Amino acid sequence: MRTRRAALLGMVAGMAGSAILPRGASALYFDDLPPDAAAAFDAACRPATDHAGLIAAARQDLLARIARGLSPAGASEQVGCPTCGCSFTVTADGAL
Image (tube, rainbow, N blue to C red):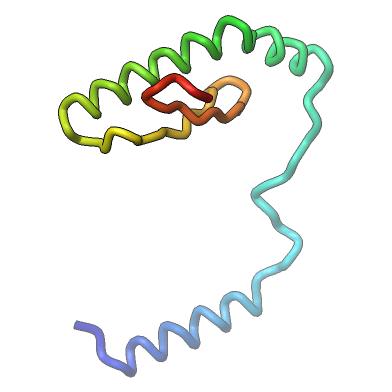
């Protein structure tokens, strides 16, 4: 078990360390996709075909959970496309 003194000394050391460290370093940055990479991502996700299969599989999974009693009858589920990030709401009656 840590004592109050050890916790306070740790906080003081952390604040002193953050004050000493340089502020210019950053681990994250955003960059635009080159046109050929953007075209490849667009071609990888064809909404007319890929999304229909994804929605059908999610609906079947939702219906199976409802049948087992794990979800209520009026349940809905938020589904996201792993390729393009499109988001859909899937319901048991098939309405989107």
